[in-house]
Image (tube, rainbow, N blue to C red):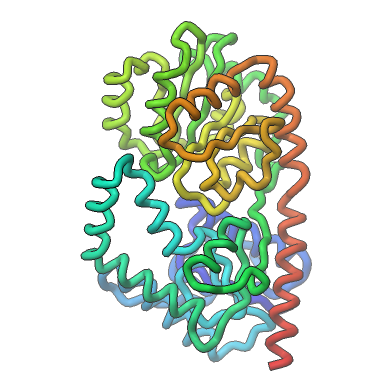
Length: 389
């Protein structure tokens, strides 16, 4: 099969979606498929040598116009090169398959308002977005993607996102294919894991008997760090229960919040980690009280490392859990007592022993190979429809 992949930037150091495009290109090439990448920027080391890379020039301009310019340039580049199937991963149009790994912009915008704790603050935030040119631009672009004259075959990574397509655009569920996100569990294999766990915990100043909850995110506000600190303050202080925060190095406001709540001595802020594997190895469970995640990769990584996951119903990855066996799911991140109760249960040593084994089993049920095979079925379906047309 001749496959054209469209993604503006394939630089894995910048995020999970960019890592994914490289992983998919390597797997396609390994099977003998011809892989073409249309991109403005890429890391050659992230791609198989056989990849045919086509540079897509994007004129400079305001941030909110850049996706339009890349999409138009990509459409023009694709028009002169026939492929069996073309795939877009973000704000593009005209491809045979669209796979919005970040979910719908419309749904993300609505869920972003939930991070504000009260109706007044949400109203002010909504008013601000009303005057934001980027919000208008991205909303209009999304309607062109999915409601334009050439409608793509849509792939999403959770049932939650499939429901969003119907809720926001009236696209019926039968028109959307669910192929859940996946990771390569081999990235988290380590024969020296006990040593690395011990050394990492020593760097954190964590005693062997302490229970450590791990929080990994770049967007602390959307992923629920503030509500998490509120909930931590409600857990019993006498029990050795620590929180380690990994992600954005700009965490000053949360340090101040932890001090106000009296939990500063129980929270360690590590900032950015290029490779967070040792953090997973050193932790006991992952807590991800997000307000919006189509299917959180950090949750999948945690499961692969045997960490139970505490998350919310706003995370598509929650669909992969069978609570309480391998994790816990709460309804609302702002429910501090409910989240505190989940933290207390996850910190129980008896629970952790059983849930850790269940977490590994959950990760094994859906691997990157399963994901890849399901995606190939979608590509084949799109190719048949293209030929029939």
